[in-house]
Amino acid sequence: MPGNLKMDAMSRTRGPVRSLFLCLNLIYTEAKGAVDMNPITDQLKSYSDSISLHVPGHHRHTIGSMQLSLDQDMTEITGLDDYHQAETVIADSEISLSRSQAYQSRYLINGTTVGILAIIQAHHKLSDERIAIMRNVHKSVINGLDLTNTEAIILPMEVSEKTNQYIGLNFDELDKCEWDTVDLAILTYPNYFGETFNILEAIQYFHDRNIEVVVDEAHGAHFDITDAFPMSSLRAAADYVVQSYHKTLPALTMGSVIHLKKDSKLISATISYLSVLQTSSPSYLILSSLEQAHQFYLHYNDGEFMLKRQQLIDVLRQAFEVIEVSDPLKLVIKKEGYTGDEIKLLFEDRAVFIELSGYDYILLVLPLWHRDDLYPFDELIRRLKTIEVKTRHNMLDIPFLNLSSGFYTPVTSRVKSVKIDEATGCKLAEALIPYPPGIPYILAGEVLTERLLNVLKTYENVHGIMDGNIKIIVEE
Image 1: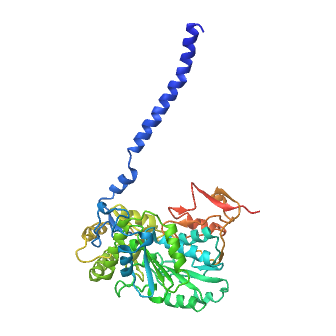
Image 2 (image 1 turned 30 degrees about the vertical axis):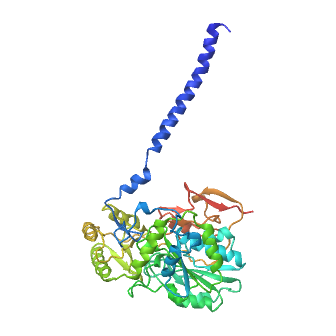
Image 3 (image 1 turned 180 degrees about the horizontal axis):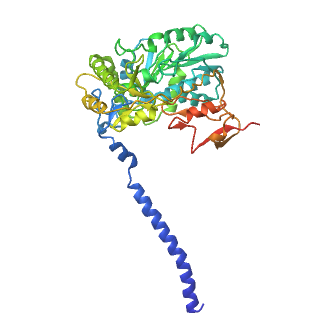
């Protein structure tokens, strides 16, 4: 090839190669820059001046005396026992964890969710019967039903006059249900908002029909901590009770406890599935925090809590309506004419962060204040006193609550994704779940109506809606 032609060919080759090299170098540089970014860590640091009125129960390490250090983040070295086959220190700790001789209690390192899933898996292994569920079950219950392809009866519900939330069972309607094909019931007690119902009557109702009872007591780990708080379902002879210690007691997030009645039908299979479903690398920091939280529970005195709670309520009532519920640890806050998001912003503008906002309310989760706690209570009061709220006329309707009972069947049909505004009148392929609180508003298989859709649009975050799309069942 002549020299000039050879040079032209090389130039033509070098051009694309050089462009590719520059492109790869740019990608590498951008990727390296991305590696140097710490968006989660940076965001966490931005809350350094914030005050917590939300879970977890240690409220930014200001409640309890949790002694934890990163040098205690260990593995199963000699002397630390094995979570999945506990025989020494973990086994000894779990003995003291039990609140009743009738129960075997276990630490959970993957949250209350894993306790719920393990029980449903155990039921699926040993039974072909249906499960009865309250409509306000956590999404983990629905996930468990889907994973095991288990059908469920949706129990008739009552609605709270105080909060317009699902609160408990409609006992007048229960007798209309068919119980011949049900051998397990899953109840939510308390509801997310701290409201209770007659759990003793409910458990007895199912036991009279030879139906075992699971109580999702995620928001009641502190129940019975003193006489000022509601009773735990452990005192009502529930067969399985799962509690999120991390929500209301000073424990690390993901730390929960499961109580299994020693004569329950599913105890052995449930324990086996707890090992299957949980990480093989358990966090000793979570385990230690649970152990310390339980000691906090055993020795708690509510004197300081009651005084500070009343002071807080008095200040809040200068600007808002304060709704007190069964559980003194929860307060629902409203203001006529204001949406929940608007009220939330009034708090967040003062770096006070709440548990959740709804259509026309916010929910506060109070700390279990105690003598010598580190919670910045005086600063909280100072910030809240700066809130000024203008009077408005109420233009908000009471949101519609879905009270449909009947059956839940996991979806196995063909599905497709559509824009949510095009889905009215269609059957959903996935539950639509406002989060928080993580309670399905519409279950898979139910029809999305315009009325239900309008309520969903008031929530900031709904699981099951992605980029304005939802999945529906393709009708054959």
